[in-house]
Image (cartoon, rainbow, N blue to C red; front, side):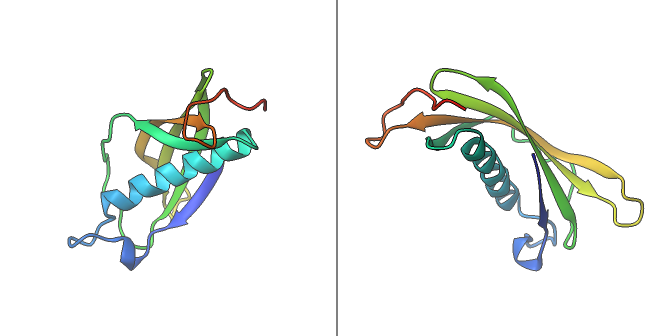
Length: 119
C-alpha cells in the first residue's frame, strides 16, 4: 500500500527540517491504516517500532511516499515494514529516507490480546 504526505511549515523543527516526531506519527498512522484495512473488525494498538534512524533531512515542500508491506503474522499480532521515500519534483526519482518494522497487537473490548480476525 502506498500513501503520500506533503511536508508543510508546521511540520518543521527550528532548523527548518521535518521534525522527527511528525515522521514517526505518520509512520504509525500509515501502518495503522494498513492493518485496519487488512483485518476489518479487529481493534489494534501499536506495540513496537524497531530501529529509529533518520537517514536524510527532509525540507518543506517535500512529498513523502510511504510504502507499507505486511511482513509477519502471528496469532495476536501483525508486523509491517514501512518505508518512507522523498521524491524529486525535478527528476521523479525517489530516495529512501526512513524504514522501520512496526508491530500491532489485536485487542478485545477489555484491552486484552485476542486472536486476529480472519482476513
